[in-house]
Structure formats: C-alpha cells, structure tokens
Length: 364
Image 1 (tube, rainbow, N blue to C red):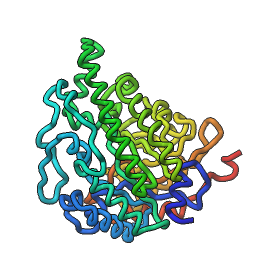
Image 2 (tube, helix red, strand yellow):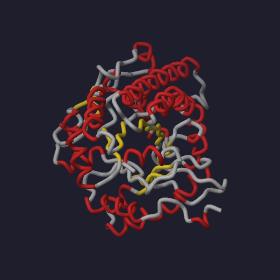
Image 3 (spheres, rainbow, N blue to C red):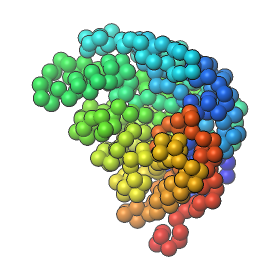
Image 4 (cartoon, helix red, strand yellow):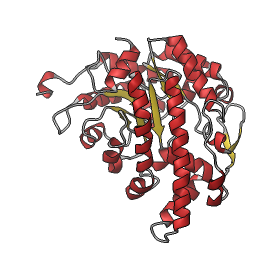
C-alpha cells in the first residue's frame, strides 16, 4: 500500500496496512530543508522542493503546500509586509468598516494574491511524487478569512454585539462578507483538487470555542462551512480525494456540528481527547492529536512515542456506536519550526510499530 493509498483509505474509514502519519509541517518543512520562510512562501518551486526534502528526512505519508494564512486575504485587498526569516505580517486590512464589504469582488485563485504560488506548488508536488505520497492543500476557512479582512477582534466583537444590540444592516453586511469569503475558499479548494491535491481543507481557527461561543459558531460559521463542503466534496469524491475540517482549540462543544459539515475528516487539536471525538462524531475519520508544543517541540522521542501510541490506540478503539472510523496520526496544529527532527521521526516509528486495526476482541 502506498502512502497515498493509505491516506485516502484511512480518510474514508477503510482498512489500511498501518495508520498514516500526517504531521502538518509547512514551515517546518522549510526549516528542515534550510529554505528561509520568507522565500519559501513566495516561491512554488522552493516550497515543493522543501517539502520533498523534508519527507526524505522524516518519512511521513503526506506533503503539505502550506506556509502562512494571508494568501487569500491578499487577493481581497489585504496588504502584508515581509521580513527575512518570517512569514508575512498584516500591514493594513481592506475593511476599515463594514461599508467596505460592498466593494469586495471574488478573486481568481489562479491569478490573484499568492494563491497561485500554493497551487503551483501542489502541481509540482503531484508531478514529482506521482502515486507514492499524498499531497495536502492548505485552506483558510471563511470566518478566519473574514477576520483577516476586518481584524479578528473587530469581527468577533461585531457578531457578539448582534445578540445584545441587533443591527440588521450590519448583520446583513457580515453575512455578505461571509458569502464572499466562503466562495473564495471554495474556488481555491476546487483549483487545488484540479492541481492534484489529495486533501483539501477548511481551517477555521478563529471559529474555535476558545474564541467564540458555540452558539455564535452555529449561527455565524457553521452554515458557511457546510456550504463549503457541499460545494467542494463532489469535486473531491470524483477524484478519490478527501476534504477536511480543522478548528483549533477545545472543539468538544461543537464536535457534532463539525461532523455535520460534510467533511470526510475531522482534524482535532490536542485539547480534544481522541475518544471523545470518536464518540461525539459518529465515528467520522479523525486526524490528530499530538500537542505540537508540549509533546513535539518540548518533549523527547520517548514522549512522542508514548503520545502517538496512545492516540493510535484510542483512534482505533470502537466508539460507543459500535463502529469505528479511520484514524490518521497527526499534529494537533502546525509543527513548530524548531521541533527536533528525532521527535517527528518518532511519530513515524510509532505508526510502523502500532496496530493497523483494533484488536479482534475490541471489534466484537
């Protein structure tokens, strides 16, 4: 079974020879390859080359064309600044107030902002690795993208005030903004699939219960995430590819809603116990959930092995419904650039040593 086959099968809850290893290592890949991140995020060839070089060192199953989260926002008018050795930083945001929403226009993912850099990197990776390895695209979620355009604190405050001081015109403009951001994310994901991505994602970190209430998520975010997957999943299914939703932090209060977005895979943070996610999501395939800080960055290889084996065991144990979905061993969020190489290699070692399925007595 190739790594690509393994990822695709696990993402559909099918039997695999071993659990796939899927650390999210965009900028970490640049670090391992010795490519300055400010160059990496601007050059598709260097991005793809760094990911291939990093995979040779680590041995994981999936490459990721990823760096910072502003590649879509720039296409919608956000200005960023670049400094040596760092990812772009926000310099100005296109929405000084909600009235500016009316002037926004949908960008073209193959022409605008830095979206073409990421798409070209996906194409290069697909060409270089062929059928051997899986390729994952990045994908900023609509709420996070709206936060980039307005400022995350302004966006969260605006929707929070709607529950105490309703302002219908403001609410209408926020929903128009969410429509634009969702359609931008959809267009990018479909383009990524066309370029050869095996996994496309909706990564909506600002929608975390650590940032907004579950009620706010249900009202202001979930309908747009659902629309994203309604639009993208048919394109993924037609190619045998996968869709993924990731929200940082403790998402336990919104796990059932996340499961209903229509994504193939739920990627969970280290704050979410694997067993809880398994029970709360009707055995949706899961990816996660090693802590990128306390385990991968600050821990030892032995710590990583222990945490990985625990995640694999819990990921493959049947849920309360009596079934089990697929499981992919991943980092709960992005692997930090300073993470020791031997720690990430320990994830791979744990997968190769661990069970590919729950013991027979647990599957009764």
